[in-house]
Image (cartoon, rainbow, N blue to C red; front, side):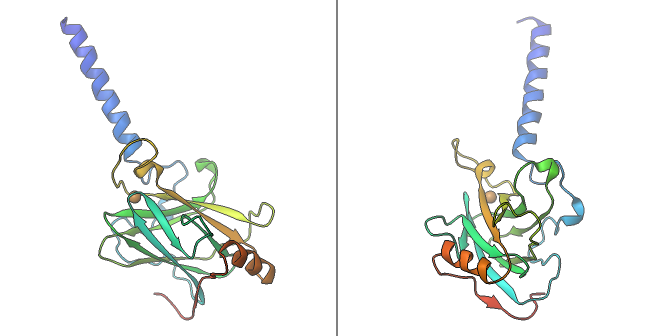
Length: 198
Ligand SMILES: [Cu+2]
């Protein structure tokens, strides 16, 4: 092999390695990500921002490679439904390795309106509060996309960290919203917790 070809080959290998690492390790690299919304990498317990209750309590179990909600949509454990205007207390646990429970508005990452999240550290109970506002309803619901923001391993296509996602459906405040929420959740409404989580 000519010296030049060896150089070209190694340059290509280095370039591809950088690209692959960048794609795989992009927990906080999404376009539009705002550092001010970060609860802090490595934070085991966090509530950002500290919002007063009463809360709708949603449990999130993180595991390779999915987020499981309780309560959740009937037949869809990775989808939950919350009511706008009532703060949500997400209680987040990991069953295996460290994951990141990271929420943003659905759609284009460059135009996303909010991002918030919390680390899911094995052995800890982590929590984060958020008051979903009824701002972007399409029909009678708005959608928030959840993804894992901590590299947590990879396997074949269709599994692994890059495909670890979930969905939060926000319904309007009030009795009509609650009726819809109850219908989607099969009657299992989130428990309501009074007080402050901080
Ligand atoms: Cu993960």
